[in-house]
Image: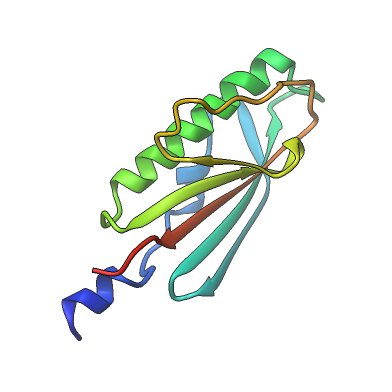
Length: 123
């Protein structure tokens, strides 16, 4: 197999525990390889030992999730990117390294996020 073809294909995913964030539980987890060039992992985060996240906790959790996406991308070939969709916030999208990303945090029972890994360009 040509090396270039491997770099243009999503060949690995992260494991369930890689998506965990301290202070939250995974209340839902689905992975869908939509093509060899795109993987969507949907994760629902719920608070540990209580009913809701406060707006401050949501803000911190969103930051930790953004950092996680940045970290995932750093472990992948340079042409494979990670992007987030925050489903509780009107499908707002975060692209790694985006400095001006803002949400209006509010109290939530569950934070629903889709991690999208995709081939940005061919090498």
